[in-house]
Length: 436
Image: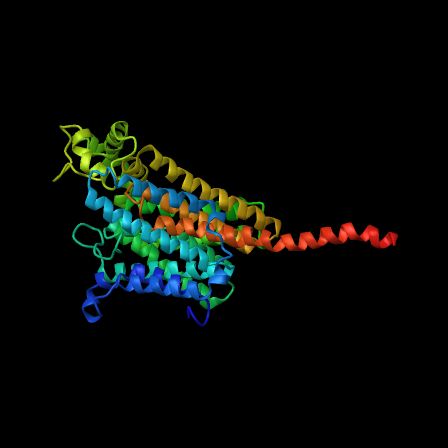
């Protein structure tokens, strides 16, 4: 399909293989032990080179997000000279640079609205597969689902954060499609995704899925840009969502969600082992390491900054449990600044994209961009409670915003400029022709 249909299929295949994680599944013994993601990246590079002239029109720096992605990569490369855990940092830097190459090629390949839809569908398909795995495996004795993660998100919290943003995309496509088969397919995918979130029991992802979907529904109901029967559709979607939730959510999930505040208070009273104390330690560490301590820098120095009487379990070398403070301790003050600017530039780009689409009254794509914003918001909420600074899904969400900005703003302006130039030429020539 990458050769016969469109080249973005290569990245779509990469997305699905990311979630399939072939060598990490129980059926891996039945297939060759090779790096499947590596070969999909090779495919991406081949089809990109094959149509180099066509894809060279997508300038990376036209999307402001890539400037900050490149700067974060440079920050990790520079930190290699003083990282506290050189081998860990080296692996993290190499993997991050590989991801930047993949993101850059993907941005080049995805240059139309249909291709953007394609990679969003591929993301949904991958997360639905994770949902199917969660349904197959079920909860363990701790009330969680383990062993269904991906290479960079092997634990339950990490994979829950990876699939949570897809829920708002399911909501958008279910609402926007008119074909019954498409609606049914999206509904099935959404059911598996929502069920997986419940089974995994990640409180951060509960908050993420609520935040992202509420953002989208608020736009549907309160935005001045309305499609036909949009407000009634929003009410219907909320009603159906509540009915579905009543079937999916069980007592275990309810108790875990309601325990967010309870557990924090109990731990603080008994041991003080709350995330807040880790975050305070991270800020103290930044004073001594203003440029960070490299990948896993907090783990290396945590014993020096955590209170001595604090019960941290089996080890005092613990992660900081927040992407914001991971950026701060990995790359110092420049790291947290670059993360903030990366996200700011993403929302700046989507805001410009929405303005352009509203001007053209293209409300179907307008709400697609709103859904992409909701997906990014979902991941931001989840990553605030876990280390996801180098997670693929964070940068996929940023990639979605960059592709939307390129397709609906940059390329649109480029297409309108020649027409405007011809119009100006006709206007300047008409008085001369009339006079002659």
